[in-house]
Amino acid sequence: MIRIENAFKKAELENRKAFIPFITAGDPSLMKTIDLVKAMISGGADIVEIGIPYSDPLADGVILQEAAKRALDAGTKVNDIFRVISKLRQDTEIPIVFLVYFNTIFQYGIQNFMEQCQRVGIDGLIIPDVPFEESDEIYPIMIAHDIAPIPLVTPTSINRVEEILQSGKGYIYCVSSLGVTGKRKKFSESALTFIQEVKARAPIPVAVGFGIQSPATASFFKPFVDGVIVGSAIVDYIHQVDGRVELVEAYIHQFVQELYE
Image (cartoon, rainbow, N blue to C red; front, top):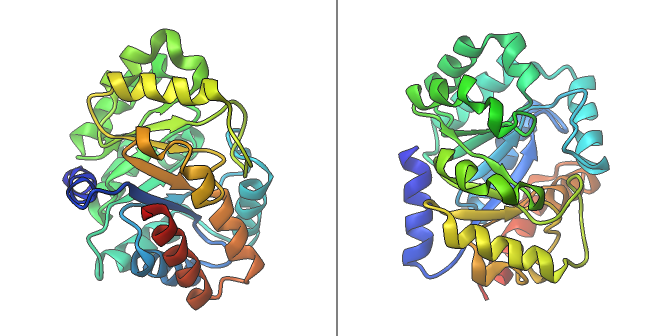
């Protein structure tokens, strides 16, 4: 968890927002995943979120659903993803967070999954289908393995937001709008009000995600958060350029530079 804490402190000291790109493991291949994460780091990522592909990703829009399907069709397995993280950890200390659905953890074995995460150096988990009311069954196990439970807070969470915010470690994943992941051209003023309220109450950094497709859309929230998460836009670009690492690095670099302006 300390790596996540240090990443936000570094961004704050440099008077900027933490940039958190997302990639689906195994799309287009696991070997490319290694190179693409390194490209994201070179391009300016502060934290990297890696999605473990799942066949029924209820929080994901079409772009991430298709990426997960491509990864699964390519034969991506959880043990192979752990091996990829082990290789990455030989070259980087950047915080790495998994986005993983609970059934994957359950099928692997909760204790075994956490032990493997700790062994390879995973810093946090986002589990979108575990509601706060059921998090007591898994958050303590994560914390015992030095893995930050990163809660999702949505506009529908407002009546129990205090409890959710207190349960999180690392950072709060603030969902910008209702619905699934994807690219959006604009957001409502009510979304901004919601995020300002979350930020005012949160004891740890707040990062906004879901729908951030460009620095321009990120700028809507940028003054009120500590970090910006970009998923579908990057995954879509990776697919468009067939995973060409140099192009992805340039895309990330340009995104980061415009985000800092």
